[in-house]
Length: 112
Length: 116
Image: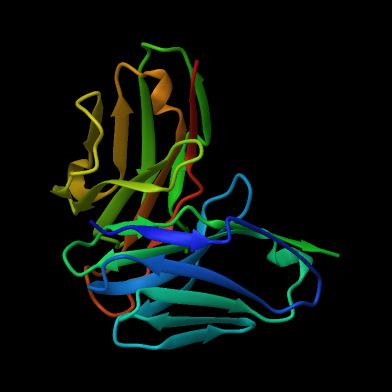
C-alpha cells in the first residue's frame, strides 16, 4: 500500500531564505509525482508535475527533484517571499491506479 | 477558461440530514475525481469518473455516499444521512487525459462541509 510522508509538518523561515520541503513514498512504482499548493480556505494549485522518467522540474523559483529508487522528492524554493506562505502537498500516482495519494502536507510560513 | 467549480462552497447541516455537493469540471475533461480531507488527515481519494462511468469507487467510505455524473458533464456527491465524521472538505478535480504525459489534475476550491 502506497504511503506518502512529508517532513517537516510545519516550517517558518524569514523572507529571502532558500528552503527545502521533503516528500517520501513507500512504493517506488509511481507514474508521476505532483507538488501542490493550498492557500487557507482555497483549493489546490498544481505547482510541478514530474513524470517517473524525469529527475527534476523547474518553474520560476521552484525546483522539484525526484529519486524514484529511493522514494524521495524534494521541493526547493529559492529566495522565499511572504506570498509563498501556504500548505505544500506532495502526491503520487502509483503505477497501478490513477488515484493521487497525498501526504499530509507542510505548512510554510515566510516571515517578512 | 473556467476552472473546476464546486457548489456550495460551505455547508452546515445537522446530523441525519442530506447534502448534495456539485462539481463542474473543466470543459472537455473526461476524467472527474472526488477527494476528501477530514480534519487533521491527508486528502484521500473517493472516486473517479471517466465520462459518465465510474472507473474506480474504491475510496467511497460507505453506502451513505452516492456519486453521479449523468451525461458525463457535472457530477454530484450526495451524503445521506450525514454523520458527524463526514465533516471535512470535499474536493473535485478533473483532467483531460488518463495516464499520459502532462496528466495535470486541476482541483476546485472545495466544498467545506460541517455536520453538527
